[in-house]
Length: 298
Image 1 (cartoon, helix red, strand yellow):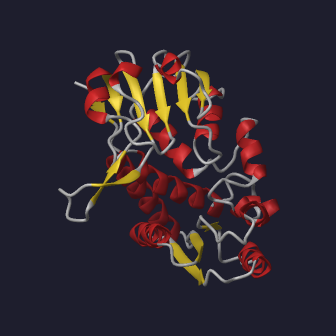
Image 2 (cartoon, rainbow, N blue to C red; image 1 turned 120 degrees about the vertical axis):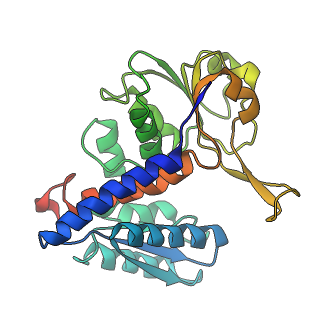
């Protein structure tokens, strides 16, 4: 019987661990970690995600704040707000919730965040440190993937890991981490993407298959071998009249089919999603403790 990689369960464990650390920190008179979020516009999904992050902080005892701006804010004005948070000693780490309005250069904004406060892990300095196998803030979703592998004690050394999707948010960093000289890591990694010819040729070779493209049902049972570990990062809303909301969340993997051939598999929802939020909390803790960059850079 395949083992479900339960992101809800593991993320709850991580929250409890962080909550205990915060309580101990308070008793010692230490500074409680503070996470801030910038939200531009009124995108419903973005608002929901930021609110969830605020609730997470409240649940474990972190301080949090959110800065809300109209989508008419200029790029220059937004950069000023980023600079304010960079220099606010009360804030240990912050995020700029994506997407941003089209008139704002996303890379310019993300690159303006100080690396030591970049708890989303998107700044080129953090990305470069991660690729160089140096301490860094790992992007939240790749963190979640690695932590699931670790906490379920899945062997990665010498295994063939096939990653489907090459985004800078998930696919590319996951491929770097799985190939790094760590655990999880030491795998042989194949990175595939939208232009890969005969995708099934590669997915059939995978001991560990990580899929992050946002195409519901892309991976079917005939595209994987027996005893594969499957981590499905895809989360897409699709119409579903049987649901009260009128939609359902579907992964990139056709779960009911692939489940029968896997040793471990993530559900959607409830797999990687909760772990992404846990990754952000972990990075905020590290930022507050100066465990990545040290006191001298702050």
